[in-house]
Image 1: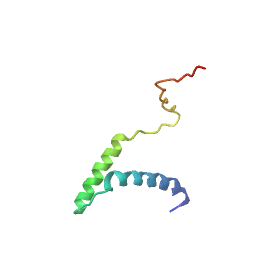
Image 2: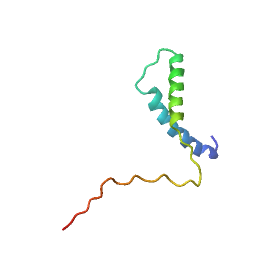
Image 3: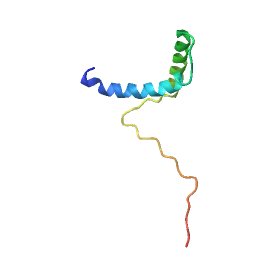
Image 4: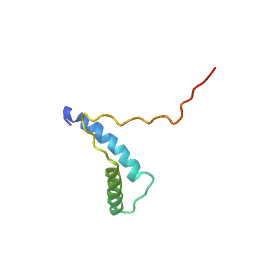
Length: 73
């Protein structure tokens, strides 16, 4: 692993953690075909929720509070 690969490893470690929870957690597999199927289903689910990051785009607005409490003395 080269020194420039460190950032890529951090990204992959985070992705692997999410993938493991989605595809592999709490399941037992009978043969390699089941693992392949679970992998493809989990990858499709993760890709459907993915939102690309575009540099320079402002952050999404924060949620406004529904109620504003004012205390009168």
